[in-house]
Structure formats: structure tokens, C-alpha cells
Amino acid sequence: MTKGITRERIVTAALELLDDQGMDALTVRALASRLDVRAPALYWHVRNKQELLDEMATEVMRRVAGAFAAVPPGDGWRDDLTAYARVLRAEYLLHRDGARIFSGTRITDPDVVRMKEPLFERWAASGWKPADADDAVDLVTAFVVGFVIEEQERRQAAGTDPARYSIDQRDAWLGEGASLVKEAGHLQDDGDQRFERHLGMVLDGIAARLDA
Image 1 (tube, rainbow, N blue to C red):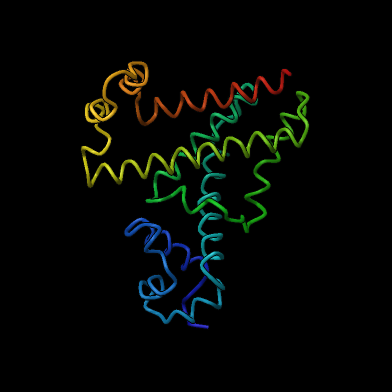
Image 2: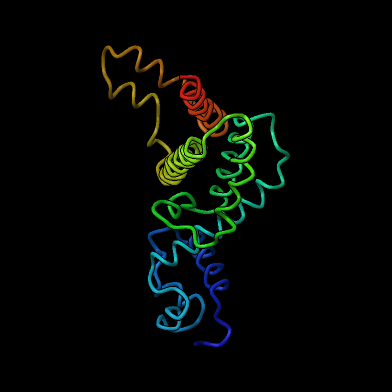
């Protein structure tokens, strides 16, 4: 085992590499070079890239759990899920390709998974079943992951090609007709306002399911 190399140091360096160069550049060889060690030295701590991604996602979710725990409990499940979604998005946005690293990963710290217990206890007191509570958290998580992946990809693409998402060019490309599609395109927004509106639609769907 290489002296001074720990799993925590590897994860920290991996997140820094992610921020500097993005997901596609995140390789064991590149990480080893950043830590000034040979790649085999990392395999004492992470057996492969998937295990590295698991640890990175766990660290991100550990930070989410800490930030979420600092938010005062809301008046009900909707406030709780809204706060969770906002904290999750904010943490993902701190990292380049932050949401992409979460897809398909497995949380390795049981304390991170246990963060749901206080939520489930509060919701169970108001009649929720554990399965419904877990589905609601999973649904909101999936929404945030997808939203932020799209948000970050569009931002990066627009940075290299400012005209890529030009509404005027899109209108010309659509040609005659499609007036409603064009109108909708001009009404679209990005960032916080769009996130809050889409999150509201997701939560409305959960509410409708509960009322059914």
C-alpha cells in the first residue's frame, strides 16, 4: 500500500479531477497521475472505476445529507421533498458533470442511507407507507439527476457554441406553421424558475397518487 494514499484522499482528488476536466477524463490512470502514484496503488482502495464512482457519489450524498439535516423540518412531505430537491441540485451544480456521476452508483455509507429515516418517520405519522415514501424520494432524486444532467450539458454546449440553442434559428428551422410549438419555445426559461416549476409538477403527481 502506498504511504499517504487513503480512500478519502482518492475521492477528494477524483472530485477535483472531475471539476477540472469532466466525467470523460476521469480515469484511474489520470487520477493516479494527479496523486503522483502508479495506478496499481489505487487498487488497494478502489478495485475499479465503478467502485470509484460509487465512492464519489457517496461523498456527494454525504454532503447532501449534512446540508439537508441543517434545513428545519417543513410543514409536511411536500416541504421536505422540496428542500431535499433543492439541496441535491445545489450540490450537483458544484461539480462539473455532478449529476452524471450519480447515475447507476451504489451508496457505500449506511449513514447516508439512514438520512431518510427521520423523513419516513414523519410521513408515516401522517399515514404514509414506507414503500410510498421510498418511491417519492426515488422519484424526486431521479428528476433532479435528469434535470441537472440536461442543465449542465446545455450550459457546457452553449459555452462553446452560443448559437446552439437560438430560439430565432429554431423558428427558422421549423419553417411555416407550428405556431404553438414556436410560442412554447419562446416562453421557455432556464435555471431556478424552470427547476421549481418542473419540481412542482412532480410533487403534484405524487399528491395525486396519494389522493387516489
